Amino acid sequence: MTTPLHASLSTLIDQVSTIIVGKRPQIEDSITCLLAGGHLLIEDVPGVGKTTLAHTLAASLGLQFARVQFTADLLPSDLTGVTVYERPSEANGGSGSGRFVFHPGPVFTQVLLADEINRAGPKTQSALLEAMEEKQVTIEGQSHALPEPFFVIATQNPSDQLGTFALPESQLDRFMMRVTLGYPDTWSERQLLAGRDRREAVAALKAVMAPEQLMQAQEAVRRIFVSDALLDYVQAVIAATRSGHWFTQGLSPRAGLALLNAARARALLKKREHVSPDDVQAVAAAVIAHRLVPVAQAGRGSVEQTQAMLAAIALR
Image (cartoon, one colour):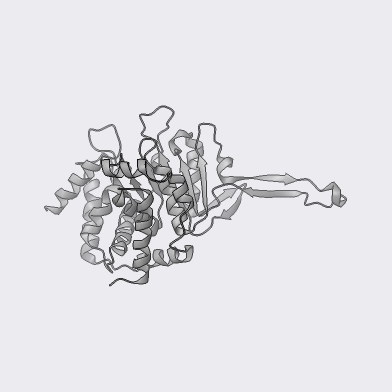
Protein backbone atom coordinates (compact mmCIF):
# COMPACT_ATOMS: atom_id res chain seq x y z
CA MET A 1 0.00 0.00 0.00
CA THR A 2 1.34 3.43 -1.00
CA THR A 3 1.58 5.88 1.91
CA PRO A 4 2.45 9.60 1.90
CA LEU A 5 6.00 8.57 2.88
CA HIS A 6 6.27 6.24 -0.11
CA ALA A 7 4.93 8.99 -2.37
CA SER A 8 7.52 11.46 -1.06
CA LEU A 9 10.34 8.96 -1.64
CA SER A 10 9.15 8.30 -5.20
CA THR A 11 9.05 12.04 -5.86
CA LEU A 12 12.57 12.35 -4.45
CA ILE A 13 13.91 9.65 -6.78
CA ASP A 14 12.14 11.21 -9.77
CA GLN A 15 13.54 14.68 -9.04
CA VAL A 16 17.12 13.49 -8.60
CA SER A 17 16.74 11.51 -11.84
CA THR A 18 16.05 14.75 -13.74
CA ILE A 19 19.55 15.93 -12.86
CA ILE A 20 21.51 12.66 -12.81
CA VAL A 21 20.08 11.31 -16.06
CA GLY A 22 20.00 7.58 -16.80
CA LYS A 23 21.35 6.50 -13.39
CA ARG A 24 18.19 5.51 -11.51
CA PRO A 25 19.71 2.33 -9.92
CA GLN A 26 22.62 4.36 -8.50
CA ILE A 27 20.21 7.04 -7.28
CA GLU A 28 18.10 4.41 -5.52
CA ASP A 29 21.25 2.98 -3.91
CA SER A 30 22.27 6.44 -2.69
CA ILE A 31 18.85 7.12 -1.17
CA THR A 32 18.81 3.62 0.32
CA CYS A 33 22.09 4.43 2.07
CA LEU A 34 20.70 7.70 3.43
CA LEU A 35 17.51 6.05 4.68
CA ALA A 36 19.56 3.39 6.46
CA GLY A 37 21.54 6.10 8.27
CA GLY A 38 24.81 5.25 6.57
CA HIS A 39 27.48 7.13 4.64
CA LEU A 40 28.05 6.89 0.90
CA LEU A 41 31.25 6.47 -1.11
CA ILE A 42 31.08 7.27 -4.83
CA GLU A 43 34.06 6.00 -6.81
CA ASP A 44 34.58 6.89 -10.44
CA VAL A 45 36.64 8.91 -12.89
CA PRO A 46 36.33 12.72 -12.77
CA GLY A 47 33.44 14.37 -14.56
CA VAL A 48 30.68 11.75 -14.44
CA GLY A 49 28.44 13.52 -11.90
CA LYS A 50 29.65 12.43 -8.45
CA THR A 51 29.64 15.95 -6.99
CA THR A 52 26.40 16.85 -8.75
CA LEU A 53 24.66 13.84 -7.19
CA ALA A 54 25.65 15.01 -3.70
CA HIS A 55 24.43 18.57 -4.38
CA THR A 56 21.16 17.28 -5.81
CA LEU A 57 20.40 15.01 -2.86
CA ALA A 58 21.04 17.79 -0.34
CA ALA A 59 18.92 20.31 -2.25
CA SER A 60 16.05 17.85 -2.74
CA LEU A 61 15.97 17.07 0.98
CA GLY A 62 16.33 20.64 2.22
CA LEU A 63 19.48 19.75 4.16
CA GLN A 64 22.39 21.98 5.13
CA PHE A 65 25.26 21.26 2.75
CA ALA A 66 29.01 21.79 2.90
CA ARG A 67 31.70 20.75 0.44
CA VAL A 68 35.36 20.18 1.28
CA GLN A 69 37.87 19.66 -1.50
CA PHE A 70 40.38 17.15 -0.18
CA THR A 71 43.98 17.90 -1.15
CA ALA A 72 47.38 16.68 -0.05
CA ASP A 73 47.88 19.71 2.24
CA LEU A 74 44.44 19.60 3.90
CA LEU A 75 44.78 19.45 7.71
CA PRO A 76 42.37 17.70 10.12
CA SER A 77 41.57 21.07 11.74
CA ASP A 78 40.50 22.40 8.32
CA LEU A 79 37.72 19.84 8.52
CA THR A 80 36.73 19.67 12.18
CA GLY A 81 37.45 23.22 13.36
CA VAL A 82 39.84 24.91 15.78
CA THR A 83 39.87 26.43 19.25
CA VAL A 84 41.14 30.02 19.21
CA TYR A 85 41.99 32.32 22.10
CA GLU A 86 40.04 35.56 21.87
CA ARG A 87 41.81 38.45 23.51
CA PRO A 88 39.84 40.87 25.72
CA SER A 89 38.41 43.69 23.65
CA GLU A 90 40.16 47.04 24.25
CA ALA A 91 37.04 48.82 22.98
CA ASN A 92 35.23 47.48 26.05
CA GLY A 93 37.94 48.46 28.44
CA GLY A 94 39.56 45.04 28.31
CA SER A 95 36.33 43.31 29.26
CA GLY A 96 36.19 40.97 26.23
CA SER A 97 35.89 37.21 26.43
CA GLY A 98 39.56 36.52 27.16
CA ARG A 99 39.00 32.79 26.68
CA PHE A 100 39.36 29.98 24.17
CA VAL A 101 36.44 29.75 21.75
CA PHE A 102 35.70 26.83 19.42
CA HIS A 103 35.19 27.71 15.76
CA PRO A 104 33.43 24.78 14.05
CA GLY A 105 34.68 23.52 10.72
CA PRO A 106 32.68 22.46 7.66
CA VAL A 107 31.96 19.02 9.15
CA PHE A 108 29.22 20.72 11.22
CA THR A 109 26.56 20.33 8.58
CA GLN A 110 23.88 17.79 7.64
CA VAL A 111 25.36 16.67 4.31
CA LEU A 112 29.14 16.82 4.02
CA LEU A 113 30.64 16.28 0.58
CA ALA A 114 34.21 15.04 1.02
CA ASP A 115 35.27 15.60 -2.57
CA GLU A 116 38.13 13.44 -3.87
CA ILE A 117 38.72 12.10 -0.38
CA ASN A 118 41.61 9.89 -1.47
CA ARG A 119 43.70 12.90 -2.51
CA ALA A 120 44.26 13.80 1.17
CA GLY A 121 46.75 12.07 3.43
CA PRO A 122 45.75 9.31 5.86
CA LYS A 123 45.80 11.65 8.90
CA THR A 124 43.16 13.93 7.40
CA GLN A 125 41.11 11.00 6.12
CA SER A 126 41.09 9.58 9.64
CA ALA A 127 39.75 12.86 11.03
CA LEU A 128 36.38 11.84 9.64
CA LEU A 129 36.24 8.53 11.51
CA GLU A 130 34.81 9.83 14.79
CA ALA A 131 32.34 12.07 12.96
CA MET A 132 31.08 9.20 10.81
CA GLU A 133 30.80 6.68 13.63
CA GLU A 134 29.86 8.76 16.68
CA LYS A 135 28.31 11.83 14.98
CA GLN A 136 30.52 14.09 17.04
CA VAL A 137 34.06 15.47 16.98
CA THR A 138 36.42 15.88 19.91
CA ILE A 139 38.68 18.94 20.00
CA GLU A 140 41.14 19.29 22.88
CA GLY A 141 39.15 16.90 25.04
CA GLN A 142 35.80 18.59 24.39
CA SER A 143 33.14 16.69 22.41
CA HIS A 144 30.91 18.60 20.02
CA ALA A 145 27.75 16.99 18.63
CA LEU A 146 27.04 17.17 14.90
CA PRO A 147 23.65 18.16 13.45
CA GLU A 148 20.93 15.58 12.82
CA PRO A 149 20.69 13.99 10.37
CA PHE A 150 24.38 13.75 9.47
CA PHE A 151 25.37 12.16 6.19
CA VAL A 152 28.81 11.98 4.54
CA ILE A 153 29.04 11.60 0.79
CA ALA A 154 32.65 11.03 -0.23
CA THR A 155 33.89 10.87 -3.78
CA GLN A 156 37.11 9.22 -4.78
CA ASN A 157 39.02 8.77 -7.99
CA PRO A 158 40.28 5.34 -9.08
CA SER A 159 43.37 4.36 -7.08
CA ASP A 160 45.53 4.11 -10.21
CA GLN A 161 45.25 7.87 -10.83
CA LEU A 162 48.10 10.19 -9.84
CA GLY A 163 48.05 11.85 -6.42
CA THR A 164 45.71 9.40 -4.69
CA PHE A 165 46.10 7.63 -1.34
CA ALA A 166 44.32 4.38 -0.54
CA LEU A 167 41.65 4.74 2.14
CA PRO A 168 42.46 2.73 5.28
CA GLU A 169 40.32 -0.35 5.91
CA SER A 170 38.87 1.17 9.08
CA GLN A 171 37.51 4.12 7.11
CA LEU A 172 36.22 2.03 4.22
CA ASP A 173 34.25 0.02 6.77
CA ARG A 174 32.47 3.22 7.90
CA PHE A 175 30.96 3.74 4.46
CA MET A 176 27.77 1.72 4.33
CA MET A 177 27.65 1.64 0.54
CA ARG A 178 29.88 2.30 -2.44
CA VAL A 179 28.44 3.11 -5.86
CA THR A 180 29.93 3.86 -9.26
CA LEU A 181 28.14 6.04 -11.79
CA GLY A 182 30.00 5.15 -14.98
CA TYR A 183 29.66 6.88 -18.31
CA PRO A 184 26.11 7.74 -19.46
CA ASP A 185 24.47 5.85 -22.30
CA THR A 186 24.01 7.61 -25.65
CA TRP A 187 20.48 8.87 -24.96
CA SER A 188 21.33 10.16 -21.46
CA GLU A 189 24.48 11.90 -22.68
CA ARG A 190 22.46 13.62 -25.42
CA GLN A 191 20.09 14.96 -22.74
CA LEU A 192 23.07 16.33 -20.84
CA LEU A 193 24.62 17.94 -23.90
CA ALA A 194 21.39 19.49 -25.16
CA GLY A 195 19.88 20.39 -21.78
CA ARG A 196 20.30 23.07 -19.15
CA ASP A 197 23.55 23.56 -17.29
CA ARG A 198 23.54 21.13 -14.37
CA ARG A 199 24.61 23.73 -11.82
CA GLU A 200 21.76 26.02 -12.77
CA ALA A 201 19.34 23.10 -12.66
CA VAL A 202 20.48 22.10 -9.16
CA ALA A 203 20.23 25.70 -7.93
CA ALA A 204 16.61 25.81 -9.12
CA LEU A 205 15.57 22.66 -7.26
CA LYS A 206 13.06 22.83 -4.44
CA ALA A 207 13.06 20.46 -1.48
CA VAL A 208 10.56 17.61 -1.84
CA MET A 209 11.13 16.33 1.71
CA ALA A 210 11.89 18.18 4.93
CA PRO A 211 14.68 17.01 7.27
CA GLU A 212 12.01 15.97 9.77
CA GLN A 213 10.37 13.75 7.13
CA LEU A 214 13.73 12.18 6.35
CA MET A 215 14.25 11.31 10.01
CA GLN A 216 10.74 9.83 10.10
CA ALA A 217 11.65 7.71 7.08
CA GLN A 218 14.81 6.52 8.84
CA GLU A 219 12.68 5.54 11.82
CA ALA A 220 10.31 3.67 9.49
CA VAL A 221 13.28 1.70 8.14
CA ARG A 222 14.08 0.46 11.63
CA ARG A 223 10.52 -0.88 11.92
CA ILE A 224 10.69 -3.01 8.75
CA PHE A 225 10.12 -6.66 9.72
CA VAL A 226 12.95 -9.18 9.35
CA SER A 227 12.08 -12.89 9.63
CA ASP A 228 14.29 -15.59 11.13
CA ALA A 229 14.62 -17.15 7.66
CA LEU A 230 15.93 -13.85 6.29
CA LEU A 231 18.44 -13.62 9.14
CA ASP A 232 19.58 -17.15 8.25
CA TYR A 233 20.20 -15.97 4.70
CA VAL A 234 22.17 -12.89 5.81
CA GLN A 235 24.29 -15.08 8.10
CA ALA A 236 24.92 -17.44 5.18
CA VAL A 237 26.23 -14.52 3.13
CA ILE A 238 28.48 -13.38 6.00
CA ALA A 239 29.77 -16.91 6.58
CA ALA A 240 30.54 -17.32 2.85
CA THR A 241 32.76 -14.24 2.92
CA ARG A 242 34.70 -15.75 5.82
CA SER A 243 35.15 -19.20 4.23
CA GLY A 244 38.39 -18.27 2.50
CA HIS A 245 37.01 -19.47 -0.83
CA TRP A 246 36.01 -16.08 -2.20
CA PHE A 247 37.83 -13.44 -0.15
CA THR A 248 41.00 -13.15 1.88
CA GLN A 249 39.14 -11.79 4.92
CA GLY A 250 35.45 -11.92 5.78
CA LEU A 251 32.86 -9.36 6.73
CA SER A 252 32.87 -7.86 10.21
CA PRO A 253 29.74 -7.78 12.41
CA ARG A 254 29.46 -4.06 11.59
CA ALA A 255 29.34 -4.92 7.89
CA GLY A 256 26.66 -7.55 8.56
CA LEU A 257 24.51 -4.94 10.31
CA ALA A 258 25.08 -2.54 7.41
CA LEU A 259 23.88 -5.21 4.96
CA LEU A 260 20.73 -5.84 6.99
CA ASN A 261 19.94 -2.14 7.48
CA ALA A 262 20.45 -1.38 3.80
CA ALA A 263 18.12 -4.26 2.91
CA ARG A 264 15.50 -2.79 5.27
CA ALA A 265 15.80 0.59 3.54
CA ARG A 266 15.51 -1.07 0.14
CA ALA A 267 12.31 -2.80 1.26
CA LEU A 268 10.86 0.57 2.31
CA LEU A 269 11.71 2.06 -1.09
CA LYS A 270 9.93 -0.84 -2.73
CA LYS A 271 6.84 -0.24 -0.53
CA ARG A 272 7.15 -3.46 1.46
CA GLU A 273 6.81 -3.96 5.21
CA HIS A 274 9.25 -6.90 5.34
CA VAL A 275 12.71 -7.70 3.99
CA SER A 276 13.07 -10.34 1.27
CA PRO A 277 16.22 -12.07 -0.07
CA ASP A 278 15.79 -9.93 -3.20
CA ASP A 279 16.41 -6.84 -1.06
CA VAL A 280 19.61 -8.33 0.33
CA GLN A 281 20.84 -9.27 -3.14
CA ALA A 282 19.96 -5.83 -4.52
CA VAL A 283 22.17 -3.99 -2.01
CA ALA A 284 24.83 -6.64 -1.30
CA ALA A 285 27.41 -5.62 -3.91
CA ALA A 286 27.23 -1.93 -2.94
CA VAL A 287 27.47 -2.77 0.78
CA ILE A 288 30.20 -5.41 0.89
CA ALA A 289 32.38 -5.25 -2.25
CA HIS A 290 34.51 -2.32 -1.02
CA ARG A 291 35.14 -4.10 2.29
CA LEU A 292 36.59 -7.26 0.77
CA VAL A 293 39.69 -8.32 -1.16
CA PRO A 294 39.01 -11.19 -3.56
CA VAL A 295 41.30 -14.22 -3.39
CA ALA A 296 44.19 -14.03 -5.89
CA GLN A 297 43.49 -10.39 -6.67
CA ALA A 298 45.52 -7.39 -5.59
CA GLY A 299 42.64 -4.95 -6.02
CA ARG A 300 39.68 -4.38 -3.72
CA GLY A 301 36.01 -4.50 -4.39
CA SER A 302 35.21 -6.96 -7.17
CA VAL A 303 31.48 -6.57 -7.72
CA GLU A 304 31.52 -9.57 -10.05
CA GLN A 305 33.12 -11.73 -7.36
CA THR A 306 30.47 -10.65 -4.87
CA GLN A 307 27.65 -11.44 -7.29
CA ALA A 308 29.16 -14.87 -8.04
CA MET A 309 29.26 -15.63 -4.32
CA LEU A 310 25.60 -14.62 -3.90
CA ALA A 311 24.62 -16.82 -6.82
CA ALA A 312 26.47 -19.79 -5.29
CA ILE A 313 24.67 -19.32 -1.98
CA ALA A 314 21.28 -19.16 -3.73
CA LEU A 315 21.93 -22.54 -5.37
CA ARG A 316 22.56 -24.30 -2.07
